[in-house]
Amino acid sequence: MSRTPKGWTPESWKTQQEGQVVHYPDEAALERVLQQLSRLPPLVTSWEVEALKKELGRAAAGEAFLLQGGDCAESFEDCSAEPIAAKLKILLQASLVLVHATKKPVVRVGRMAGQYAKPRSSNTEERDGVTLHTYRGDLINRSGFSPAERVPDPTLLLRGYERAALTLNFVRALADGGFADLHHPERWDLSFARRSRFSAEYARIVDSIKESVAFMEAVVGPDVPRLKRVDFYTSHEALSLRYEQAQTRRVPQREGYYDLATHMPWIGKRTAELDGAHVEFCRGIQNPLGVKVGPGFDEEWLVALAERLDPRREPGRLTLIHRFGADAVERDLPRLVACMQREGRAPLYCCDPMHGNTLTTEAGVKTRRFETILAELRSSFAAHEASGSHLGGVHFELTGENVTECIGGARGLDEADLARDYRSAVDPRLNAEQALEMAMDVARHMAAGG
Ligand code: PEP
Ligand code: CO
Image 1 (cartoon, rainbow, N blue to C red):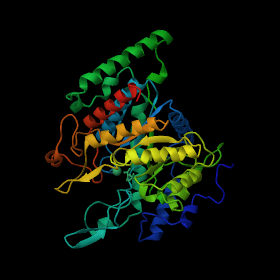
Image 2 (cartoon, rainbow, N blue to C red):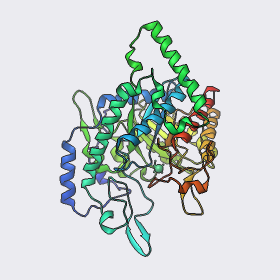
Image 3 (cartoon, protein in one colour):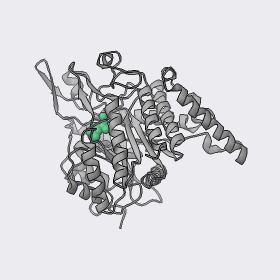
């Protein structure tokens, strides 16, 4: 079977119905931007994309574990040293905790360097009788509430590409040496989390890792290069197909097309129609793909979708990111697994315990409860186990900063605390302390054989 499906081209998605469509008022300006974007160098390489696919294949087989996390939406404003380093730190810390517990490689994938576009449930937003276009993320328009700021601006596609490149440049440098050196995992400490109830447990893990590193070097000699750097991959929702298409290319000595804007694009819940533009675009690229699957999903749809996106049943190609919510997971997850088992498929299952558990407080603030997030995770582990399957990854919305957006966790944040430091323009994120606590719980669960 050819790697490029019959009838597919990088722009064949244009013949299909496009969900979350953006209307750019100036077509010529859009075209100019897309021309430029398609001439600029790629953000990632096909080698990395293939390496990630292989690792995800291992996770699907139970030999590795996927940790995917980052902001709901990155903002251009936060393209700056501190938030990026803090996010990398919390992801590294969480991965260390997971490695320690599972003794398996952890595949680290950030929601980073391109997570700039957001699906919205409404095309418009109304405030005090004024109705404007909804804010769709920094890649599309601006968040301020004025007509000019809400008009889709194609130059933001270029600004987004540049921010993604700057982010990636910094992340690669950090992941490549010094900072990510396993001899010094204490460098990843986030100062405010040092004061948390988990710092002692974390310190024990760090000591134990250092001991293992010393042991290994005593055996194989110093300067094991793999210990001085970590692999880190990027992912984002492939929502703006114009942006993705402009970075989609053939590369020498490989078959097929690669979306080189990110390692792992995913299809969001709102744009996963079988005949929709997003599925059409994604089926033709070689990248590993994520697909969000929500409560009440249709089994026929899922079977057909898996076939369309992964007809060759390639290991690591398909990750089903289930986000049922703590209420629906026990009903829908066994259905999901059974459906794939009937097809003889074993995709990678990754639990996103965030998006099915969003609530609005009486004061009108969007939040999530730590305990509910944890409940969905625990139920997911159990449901997979009972179905003869296994959970191969987790997907979090988190930040390395000390924000107060989710309720609960060891420090007992409550509704009143949300007002203190709520920064997300979209979904509420776990702060670093909550994320570490969550990782420790997952780790304990997995170490206990769950
Ligand atoms: C998201 O991941 O931020 C998101 C919008 O998720 P979903 O498509 O699952 O609703
Ligand atoms: Co979100």
